[in-house]
Amino acid sequence: MLANQRDTIAAVATPPGRGGVGIVRLSGPKSLHIAKQVCRIDLQPRHAHFSDFRAANGQVIDQGIALFFVGPHSFTGEDVVELQGHGGPVILDILLARTLELGARQARPGEFSERAFLNDKLDLTQAEAIADLIDASSQSAARSALRSLQGDFSREVESLLFEMTRLRVYVEAAIDFPEEEIDFLADTALHNKIESLISSLKTTLAGAREGALLRDGIKVVLAGRPNAGKSSLLNCLAGRDTAIVTSQAGTTRDILREQLVLDGLPIEIVDTAGLRESTDVVEQEGIKRARSEIDSADLCVLLLDDEKLHKALQPPELSALLSELLGNDGLRERTVVALNKIDLYQSQAGRLTADYPFYAVSASSGAGITELVDEIKTLAGFSGHVGGGFSARRRHTDALQRALQLVEHGYQHLLATSAGELLAEDLRFAQQALGEITGAMSSDDLLGEIFSSFCIGK
Image (cartoon, rainbow, N blue to C red):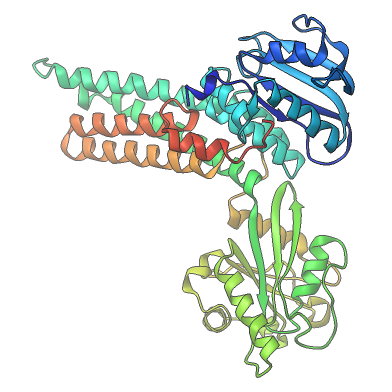
């Protein structure tokens, strides 16, 4: 990787397709030399130069703006040049080919951001936030990604590492000086510090989980018998007629998907075929696909429309229905039951049992839908209070969860056996877990996996 850093890399840094402006970006020691041969003028640092971009025979490829940034005062920390021309794919390909002809090589996906990370221009969470900002599917997700890019998440992790380091120093000093009359490991101040660290880890983990939900969203599958109102509910949530709705049972045969943002939470809503016994080959395949989608769902909304259930739904009856229709005990904790068609059955919207969350709604009139959406967000762990949040990924939440478990494990040993050595060891592993988040401790394989998901020009 370090050997490759000596290369000068080039790539188109604007999206594929036609546009008013297209950018070819270069980074590395030959950037200025290549730019001078393309532009045939001297480039001053941080000045915009209007220039012709020329081929080897002097023919004009395009006209545009050339910008030169001297390292380390650039995005990558190296000499960087941007050639900003017209945004036609053919023109950009010709201009990129000219830079490669002059000694640059095609950049790998994410290599510009990777170099910025390796040159200490940003840490790993900030580098990932660039991709998250580009891919943001909602305003909330974009704001959270920007806060991570500006270092909010990194500062929280660094604060945890600082707190953990001080705690390790205290514990290891107590271990190294056992002859002291005072038992430092039994000191109330130490216990308070550990409990404070655990509290801080839980707070950051909760914020990271919220940020991961904003980034990744959740998959919600609508399930139930034919004609329960699944397609009507999909249309209600989407705010348009996405699915065909008829009074004929079995209208939905295939899987329908809709990408929504509900109160800032990205959701993939999946409408499925009605669950029942059928001799129709096509419907059987639809039911098979429905069960596959149910098994892979983050959350399942089970729609029921039986008039008797509206009048007297008891936990045993609901349990039997869950087993019959869903057939997966693991789904019960992530299933919300919606009794549909309250406009017909005069049921009360927003009801809950002690054992299962269920709501009476009307997909046609919208009654009870707000309460149902709130329940979906609650089950997903999404509070919606993301004003000061940050973008996060699954690997971040996994690392924070491991760190929390290690500190709690070490604390349990301390309380049970006064085993300071075990606490110190758990704190060391917890530090390593936190270090993975910002890249202070990351393997080359992890870096390669992260940056390979980036755009070519980033």
